[in-house]
Image: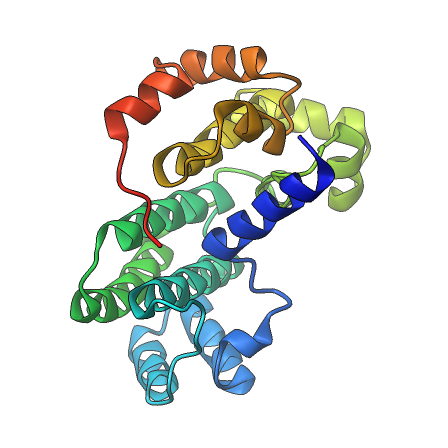
Length: 249
């Protein structure tokens, strides 16, 4: 797959999964956004709901030419922010990311504006409930840092050295600690995460399976297919055919 095609696919992926860290323009007030995230991370649902209402008094940014698509993109932005906030508040990353994935899929399945607008508030309350019910983190800070880094860079050619450097430990120590706490190796964890993320493209785009394999840094389509079959019990083609939905504009 050419560099230009892959870059275009990455751009498309990032628009739907939304990496907000450098895109403050997506929100009407950066100060309000910071206050909202602070309230969420503290588990203060009453304050967070008031701030969200204040933010939504302003016109939402235009994130797509089609209004319903723009609204969905805005909610995906919110979902990503809520995810970061509850991780900061103490929720282990994999729990937060799993919740985020579920809501993003639900956002894609709803096509009514009023339902989507209500969903944002329901989503906020649900994220805070998860935060307030979180008792202890099953993983150490080092392993949580590694999981967060993997999730944020899932389209990159990840290496153990790269992940360990971000966690400020040696590769051998991280490898041992990760396997001990998570129960699988870092390579297995990355592969499972890539398979899960790739399902979005199978369901919501017409991108070829070979290009999806390349996008997620699998060495070839055959290896991608074998791993997909291992974790999902279906080949990518079978999964797409069984769960196919019309691609939305």
